[in-house]
Image 1 (spheres, rainbow over the protein chains, first blue to last red):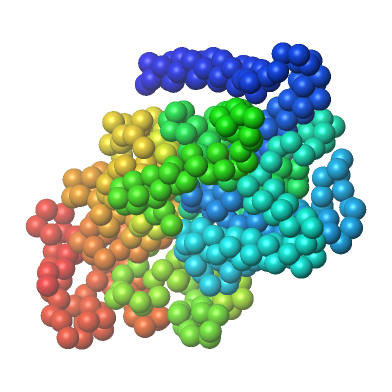
Image 2 (cartoon, rainbow over the protein chains, first blue to last red):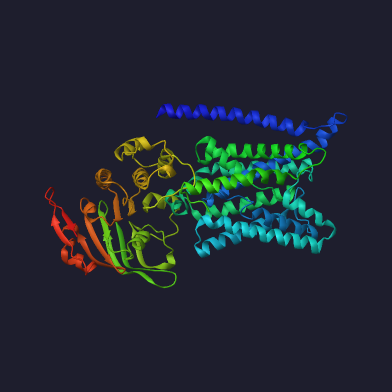
Length: 326
Length: 251
């Protein structure tokens, strides 16, 4: 038994080193890949650095939100994108923006938080009212997502015919729209929420055996879900407001971290989910702006390109193993 | 002591699941519930465990000196008083058995049970590093029972929690549950395996159509006449085991 624990600790050390190494490589790639040497300093400080910080902030926040949603819904396919939370946020942000409501937080749009919260509220309401099995939630989420996305397109077409191109921004994500100040404040927010969830990781653990077992571990089902919904709405709302909808980071990262760590206990996986979320989006962004240089791809297209197959893999393989996924 | 006075359980639509019933269960007792499907066993057990909504339950339900539905008792305190375990356990995530048992210990830090010892007694030492979702149903039930013992609540409510455990392990766990009760805890369980539960329950309650049709010491309750009340169209013989004289059924 002790040997196994020692082996586990050794493996964790190796994972930490790998994580640090990949993080550094990702940062270097994001900063220096395909850079013009004539005005390098300017490009780095003005363009690439804010983008790097934003990519880490959004990536870590989305991965964190994905993990928390997966846990409280007991469903490995849940994440802000598949649950429709991101679309709700985009819709809310777009409406607030065109109406000129400037309630904000360091340049981030509060409308997005309302949008995200509304979608999660509707989702949980339906789930509780209909006693729907928690695993059908993703199907419901995808429908809500379609609905919000089409409302977004209609709204943009009617309210802002000139800015209708910005629908692409909301739907596919773009990390180049906000400055360093906003990026840093989002990073702080993400860190604060991480600290909160880490502190209450035992409460999240209680959800690992399904909703009927939560209270048997001495944890309040409804209270924890409420807190999770509110915090995730804030986090996803601000992410979408800053960078548009970026899908599947919240799906892929928690899955691979759990697999690599050989555990789902939140105290173990949360720190890695946080950092790897950041790494994942930094790398996706580096790919997005380097692969078709000087053209730039929307970063959401890159994450979806990688993420959708992971979703299919998870669905098909977990399903064939007889686990209760979707 | 669990005491129920004039307790009735209904669905939100008004259908009566358990008709008005009153009873008391002292600590250090094992009570077995037996009856046809849909006779209200699970509803009664879930009421005991405080799992139903207060709206659906009328009457007075007390555990020791506090009402089951009193909100001033924290949920973490409730988990140390009563633990309800069903028969079907699933997780979508990779959690090892050891991690689960640690979670149980964490839920009740005052528990005197030693995780390693309990694991040994339940024959799950070899399963400790296995992932919970990769095990067979019977193994999952054994692990969950071990978890219940480690968490060491005042009352264990087992709703067919050993329905898929093999003969040999069943008898091991019977001994373990007897030990739990010796330490002053109480167990209320439902099972369809009368011959197994007759080995260790003190009281037997027979349920049909939401009513407790007979209750008392198993010696008195387990009779052909009472079995006929449950299953009028079946002939059930009650005989004594040649080994220990306990009552068994043949059908």
